[in-house]
Every structure is written in C-alpha cells, then in structure tokens.
Length: 628
Image (cartoon, rainbow, N blue to C red; front, side):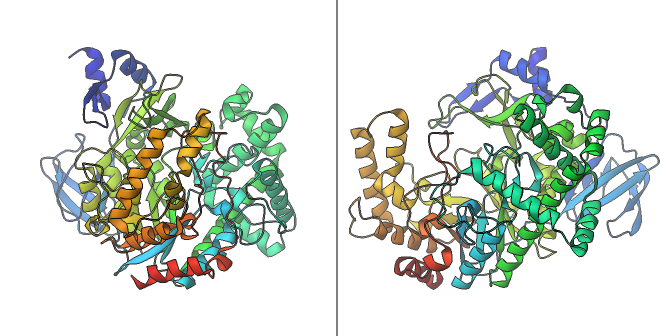
C-alpha cells in the first residue's frame, strides 16, 4: 500500500466503489490526492462517544481504568468504575457526561428506534409551499400552508409533507432552489406571510419581482411592530444567541454587497468582510444595526408562521402533522459557509458518481458537514441541524439518506466523476438521530423517513429499518429484475408508499409522456420512436400491475385513480400522494439536471385546495384513500 493509499484509508476515503451495474470501479490516485489536499482530517481528542440503551460502551483511548463520575442528563450523579476502557450500560437515553480527572466526554445513549407512525394505516399529501394559492399572494407562504393543512386534515389526511424551508438568500431572487440553502439552521424568510393578496397571479412564479416585493412587505410589518410584539421579538432574538446574530449579519451584508456589486455570496465580498469575527464586520453591524435587526425579525416572523401552520395541521386532525425536509447540504457561499466554515467540507462539493441516468456523475454544487469537524466539535453541528428541522414537525424526510453513511465528494473545479466516497460517522449520527426524533414534536416524537431511492449499498436499508427509519417506495421505481412492476401488495411494510416525488413525472404526465417531451425539447429534438415504444411497453406493464382494461395515452384520469388506489393498498403504514397527483396534473415541480430549461420550483397550482377537494375527481380520490 502506498503512502497516498494509506492516507486515503485513514481518512475514510474509498478507493473502490460499485457502479449501478454492480461493477467495481477504482478512484484514480490524482483524484485521491486532490481530495486529501482539501480535507482537514485533524481530530485532537475524541470527546464524544455513543452507544445503545443498556449496552456496554467502548470508551476512547484517553480513558484510564479506575474510578470516574457519570453525570446523567437529569442531573443525577453516579460513581462508576472503568475497566478495559468500557462503560457499563446506561438505562436512560440522552446526552450524559463522563468525567475522569481533567478529562470529560459526552456519552450519547440512543433509544432502540425512531418513533413509529401512529397505529393503523394513513395517507397524506406533499406540497411545494410556493405553489399554493391559498391567500392569493404572488406565491404560497406559511399562512397558505396552514390553510392547505386545514383543508387536507379535515379531508382525512394524517400528514402534509413539504420541501425544505431552510434559509435561502433573501436579497438574491435567482437563488430559489430549496435544496441549495444558505443555512439549514434558519428559515426561508420569503415564506413569511406579509402583504396584500395579488389578484390573478400567473401560473408561474416571477421570483425576480415576487421575492423583492415580499421583502418590502416584511419591512413594512417590521416597521409597524407594536410594543408587545417588539418585546416578544427581542426576547426570542436574545434566546437564539450568536447563531441568529451570525445569520442576520450575513443577510444584511449580503443585501448590501449584492445591491452594490451584485455579489452572489461572501467569497465575492471585500476581503475584510469574509471573516465573521473581523473588525470590519463588527463595524458594519454597528453602522447597520437596524438592517441586522430586520433580518433577525424576518426569521422570527417566519418561524412563528411555520409554528402556526404546524399547530393548524395538528388541530385539523392530522395524526402526524407536517413532515419537514432536511436537505443534504448547503451552498458554500451562504451563511453557514461564512460563519461556520470549520464545520463544512471546504473546497469540496457533494454529488453522485456516474450512473445510467448521469454517465458523467453529478455535482450538486453544495457542500456538507465534515466528519472530522463533527468529531472535533462533539457532533454539535449535526444536533443543531436536526433540532432546527424537527422544530414544529411531526416527522422529517432526510434527503439522500445515504449521506449519513457516505458522501461522494468532488474537489471544486474537478469533473463530477473525479470524486470518491468519504465515510461518515454513521453509527454516531444514527444514534443522535434516534435521540432527537424521540424528543421532537414537544416530546411526542416524530417519524423519520430516509430517501433511499436509487443504488444503495447492501444492508443499508436493513440498518434503516432496524433503527425505525422508513424508506421510500415510489410507484414507477418498484420493479422486479426483469423490469416488471411489482404488485403493490408485495411492497415493504417498513416504508412509505408514494405515487411520485417532486423530481419525477406526475402519474398523468408519465402516462402521457410529458417527461419525454420535456427531455426531447431540451435536447432540441422530437421524442424518438424508441422512447415512445419503450414508454408504451411500460404503460402496459404498469397497468397489468394496478389496473384492468388499459386506458388510452390521452386518458390519464383513470390511471391516476388506479395509481392512488395502488399505493393505498400496500402494506405501508403511510401513503403520500403529492398534490399534483391528487389533482391529476401533468407537470412536475422540478426536472433534475436543468436550471433554466424547465420552470423548476416556479409552478403554481391551478386553484386553492379548499376548492379543488370539492371537485368530483379529487373528492373521489380522497374518498378512496380514506376507505382504505
């Protein structure tokens, strides 16, 4: 083994990986060297250990045999005797502290599983919040979400899943993808309700005008705060401390330099402002005290509105409530990249290796938490991230759940296929996830869904299931080795069932070949006969699994009904039907691999949900879901 290979192995980089066909691939030495040059692998001393309830734990090398003091999370102190660097099982889940002389360790003890869904079988829907028309604004917001949740809850839904609501870049209306946030610790303030309804809002969101208008409306709300509101906000701001201050300073600085220089993030700012601890930043914050306070207010206003939406969901009868979404990473030029650079994989982006859908690999243009920084900081960044997304939610969906186990990382500027898998501290992160899930939702617990679509390592789904995480089974992907569609009754009961996701064609759009038309249009050609013939065969195969007499391609309503009925009769404890399928729409919210070619994250629903659910087709679909 060469020194390079030994360093890669010590850092958790895999030289070998398997492609989607199960064939072994090897990472080049050049790629390994480029990645190692960017990894800060130093961990001075391990101060965090995790284990299972009642099971003996192995302690770090710095532990000595002999007496130690265990301080349980509830404040109880226990004298313990350590032998062979082991600690006897602890019967209380949570974060405890072990002290031995000058040394101390956090000891995280996890419950056996994440919370289970409520007894019985349930259904829910999924929405892109900006697409909602409740309230009549230029795009949907958290107030719209509350009204939509009330409508669906009263109709019988147990949950409403939403895409990430992480903080974006308030001054820059071009950065509206929910999966490339500035920070996962705070909210997208564009979704904070403010302003008067807009009559006849178009079918596509004009973010370039709508986002700045929302910020102006929020400013008016801020300027009109009464005394009681001001006191409540100031108290909330003080409680949120340094993290909120850093976010508000970043947003104020970004607004200033974006307006002055069209800066797209902190790397474009003058050098003195790139360090959050610099005198220049302190001077700016003092001179622009009101701007900083306004951006802190926007976070408060947004968080209050999201909390109200979650309360409305539960009050409407939803057994689960809102299911929040955790994006896998953040944009490096955002607030976390500026103020928490040491927590992230700097100089590296995450993505996916080459596969049939992306033969050149994928670079998502975002970064993620560093496994070495997590160990250095006692996993605090991960715990804080989980608490931010669990807040107000009855469940979460973890985007690309495999990222808890390993990440495909690519040096900035390199092709996506010149990456390698980096191991994450999976066991520790999974135990933390179980602790936080049990404590979420005001102690009621929250379910955890892991997005496990595509190729995952053998055994990964078994580990998820053992931990109580629900996988995802999506109708177009559930096939046997010959490509035939699996009968819904054979799907795994340790998963949720879905007709589609935001990244694939709706049932109606797939049946009509709308996704094929989009891909062909983007490529500047017509749909090929081969693609048309393949889809015709797939339609017939799907219908053999879920229907009787095959409808015509231009008659998708019957197929939508059958698809919804199919996911409703799986053994899954929860079926989620995206609102686009509930309404029988053709167009999907997002087309992966595109930026301007497709109106990603811009589509509005055709009507409000309270009116849509009364139409005969939608009412019949809801009745079928409730009946099953």
